[in-house]
Structures are given as structure tokens and as C-alpha cells.
Length: 476
Image (cartoon, rainbow, N blue to C red; front, side, top):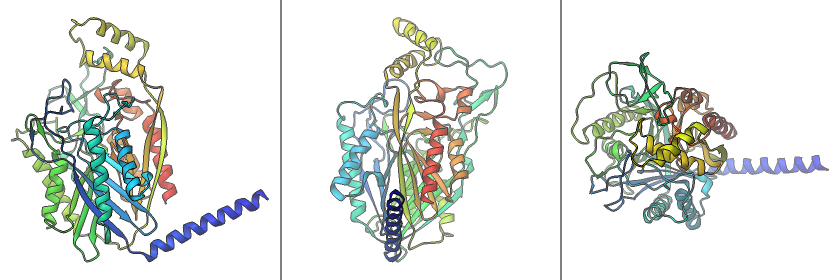
């Protein structure tokens, strides 16, 4: 009897899958895109560096949520890229709740990420491991405006065709973690030895970069059924560029790319408007500085424009070679993964308490007082957190979503092992919980591995990769 019931359920499930596939085959692919302005008001703190966040005094360029919705007749998904350094999961969950309430689109069919521009006001909690009791005014605003953007993209749905491609741009991504020559002394904030230095500058004792880079720009292109550009979502593993003005709000090169790709595709002032977006790939250990040679001085925003233009030019060159599809299967899987929260060792805890007990003590190690406070924060945090992971299929394109600043090695592994080609990873998706080094990079130390910068267990990246690939296999 049990076997009969199992077979009956299996048959019904297969029939449902078959019916969905037939429905998708019969209906045209729909796509919609929209933007929503999330620029904060002046006076808020611009986060991204040590010390007290300086107040925003000027808006150089507006910040946006850039939204894309796809529908194959059986499945509808939303992909959103937000011009913000970090957005807590709870804020994004609230945005998803509002979209579901207004449109019926399930929360597990939405992928929302932050770009990690360092010229924005924070939309995350002071301690990402412990949500606050109430949203700040800006968190409420961001959640509402993200929801508005997705709703507008749904409103803009129309018959469309899509394509995917890649372009290589190796000259703008560099590993920012360097091994130094023997004899160099490096210490973390707790007085423990490190083997690598983040952002070491152009110093004579540089040995070699401590990790690889991913020079590939992967992208998803969307056109209307008659061939008019509708949207383009790109992905590049570059932390951010910087070189903005003091106290400036800016979307950094992510926003400049959106403007430039629109220009190069001749997509200005269309109705509905074309939407370009650059999502952040696996750039936790990557930036735009080549420390093997002196850095060329640039005017404000000059490097941002240069990088954005090179990215856009590389994409457009491949855009002309794309194979377009008026139908493509869509699917998304979502899973919560429990990770242990990293706790201070007895020696680190003793050190931290000693530092905090003496208000007149000057730092003897890098950012000693700041990380003493972070060690206590880690101690008081829950023993474990549950993070949201997603794997997405768009035709033969694969997308992975991870809520950390992810090391490039992890993204390269996912690309190599993904059942979909091409594939790319969007970091800081569906939340943000600090840096995600590999276990091998943990052994080398350095800023990204310090307790408080890295907040979860050292095996986290292994578990995350396994979970994402398992979900991708289900989509295949």
C-alpha cells in the first residue's frame, strides 16, 4: 500500500512538472525591468572605512535598486541589484514580504543583493548577527523602495528574448592580499602573527599575491520581442573602485557602468526605460589596486569612469555575438544553511578585555581597540546563524547567491563545477555577514580573516559551495 501511494505521488509530481514545462513551452518569455531611487537624505553616516562614518554632504549620483523580472509561463523570478554597501537580511525580507503581499510573487523567487559601494549610508544592523528590534528610518525606506522597483518591473512585463555571455577584463582586478618576503613582521589586532597584508601599498618587501583573481564579466541581456534593448545585468568580481569626493554619496563604478552600457547600446530614453546593472561578484579579496607598481594619480571619479567604460566596452563587444532565445526555462532553489558563529579564543578574550579596561591605552597592534570590541560582540552573539543561499537557472545560465563578501577562489570553484555554463556568483545577496575566506586563506591570516571581520566558522565556504551545487544539480 505504501509503495502504491509513493508511486501515485511520484506520478502526480511528474505530471505537474510536465504540465509546467508544456505551459512554459507554449507561452512567450516575458521580461520587465525598472529602477527605484533609494538615495538617502544628507547627514547620514557614510560607512565602509574605520572610524566614525563621515556625514553625507553631497549627492554626486543617485543610488538605485535596479530590478529585473523574468517569467517563462511556469515560473516568475526577480533579480535586484541595490546601490548599498550592506543590507541586512531582515530589511530584504521585509521588501520581499511587501512584494508578495502586493503581487503574489513568492519570496523564494526573489534574489536581492547589494553592490558594496563605499559611498552609501548603511542599511544593516550595527551587529549583523543580532537584528535590531526596529528598523531605522532608512532601512524602512530602502525596503519599501526595493518593493516598489520590483512591482514596477512586473508592471513592465512584455514578450522578450534573452541571451547570456561573458567577456574577459583582466586589467582591473587585483588580489589585495599579499604575502611579504621572509623577515617581515605582521600581527592581527590580538597580537597574533599574520602571513599576509591587505592593501600593503607599493612596498619593497612584497613577495606575491596570496590568491587568484576572476577576470570574467558574465552578463544576462534582455531585449523586447522586436529587438529593442530592455535590460542588462552584468557581474564582475571587483570590490569597488573608490576615488569619490569627500562626503559624497555615489553608486561608484556600479552606477557608472549602468549609465555607460545604456549609452553604448543606444538605449537612452526608451519607454519603458532600459535598465543596466552591475552586480558584485566574488571580490572579498579583490580590488582595483595593482600593488606591484606605483598607483597612477587620478582626478575624482576618473578611475570610476575608466573602469565602468572598460567593463561596458568589453560587454558590448560580446553583445554583438550573442545568440538570442525567445524561450528559456527558469528555476530557482533556496535553502537556509546553519553556520556556527565564530567565538574568541580564551587568549583573544583576555586580550580584548584588557584593552577595553584601559581607556588611555594606545593601540599596540592594528585596530586593536576596535577589534577588542568586536571580540566581545562575537562572544555575545548567538551560537549559530541561518543564512540564505540561492541557485538560479536562466536557460543555460547559472547564478549563485551568497550573503557574504566572498573570496575569488570560491567563485572560481563554483564556475568550474556548475552544471550551467556560463555561471556567476552574486555576493552580499539576501543579507550580509562579513567576509567569507576559504579554510586555506584562514591559515594565512590577514584583515579578512580577523575575528569580527570574519564572523562564522572557518569551514563555512566549503559548506556553502556544497549546498549551492546541490541546488544547482536539482535545477539541471
